[in-house]
Amino acid sequence: MNIDASLLRQAALAAAGGQQYPAATLYLVATPIGNLADLSLRAIHLLGFADALACEDTRQGGSLLRHLGLHKPLIALHQHNEREASAQVLARLAAGERVAYASDAGTPAISDPGAVLVREVVAAGYRVLPLPGPSSAVTALSVAGDTAATGFAFAGFLPTKAGERRTALQKLLAVEGQSQLVFEAPHRIVELVTLLAELAPARRVTVCRELTKQFETVHTAEAATLPAWLAEDALRQRGEFVLVLHAHVPAAAADDELPAEALRVLALLAADLPLKQAVALAAQISGAPRNRLYDAGLKLKRGDDE
Image (tube, rainbow, N blue to C red; front, top):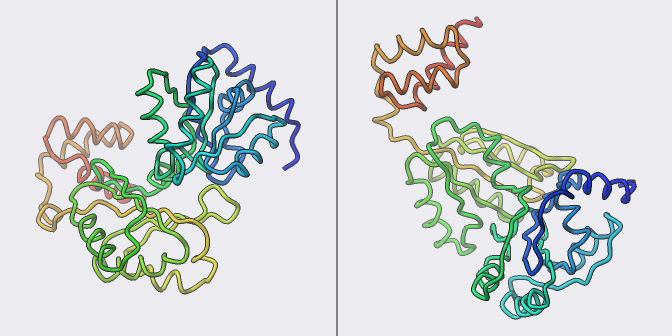
């Protein structure tokens, strides 16, 4: 990527330079999950004056600094040495330094190293401040369109052993009302969607591949169709995956009709208000479930458009 690093740092200074960045503090820096343009100006500014960068992989951390025209001491801190490397960070904090920590991609400590470091730093009496930014889990959730969900849960990577994997997936699929976020590696994605097709063929699933990268893919369909969809194109089996298992709605709840009064109130409100606002008000007035009112509102809108 051709970029004038000095201009980028000047823009970061203008945007974030007036904020407070206390010394003797660990800063958790979210980094891009695939597109360097997603690095925040605040993160760029912080990396510019941090005294050291602890990182999951010093090659990745070094590459990020070079992209910004920066040179900093690097501390390797990954899942195999997190406790030991935390001692190096603590020594720098004791000297009053500002230390940044970045995992390879995304937000630290979310299925990445960082949690042990945070615990050790807090236990030693030092501050930990987050610089929010990219997260593949939240990015995938935002494009899933799971209107039946009342919340979400992050499962990360499932067990690799077949029996444990099946049991873990069965437990996730049995949870009612929540989207479930699952990470998967390319060499196991076929196995995972095949198992999903077996255990919950009618469940809607959003498959996100290579998010924010040049060939990113977002595909939402019933689980039964996913093995064939993957097989249609070998490229669909490459890259890093995030799957959103849409919320499980019990059959009885899904089949119940909304009260006529709730539908009448919704129709009146939807005629003059944006759908989300109409649904929220109709739910307050009628007591009907918001997710089912939203689905009914979508049908009303489609009927108006036809």
